Length: 100
Image 1 (spheres, one colour):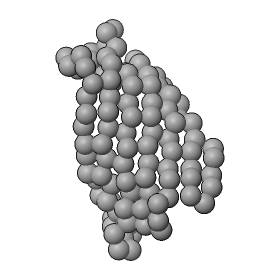
Image 2 (image 1 turned 60 degrees about the vertical axis):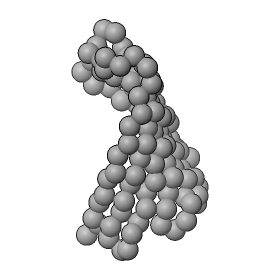
Image 3 (image 1 turned 30 degrees about the vertical axis):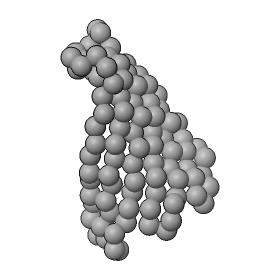
């Protein structure tokens, strides 16, 4: 893994029942409380053979962290149950966590 004061990157290998993937997670520190992250990946899975998520990790106060994320996915694996949508797929999410 690559670890620096402002950049972190690694290699992600995943394997499960009827799926496998490889990814490149990366994080870029924008400030003391904000990180930009992405984890492009490709694999054999039920939908989105290629995924490119981009998100922020924002620490709010001492205990709360918000993580908005958007992602672009493309491609289905015909031998697995995939999404009926043949083109690119875009989705977003908002997560939060509380640190004790």
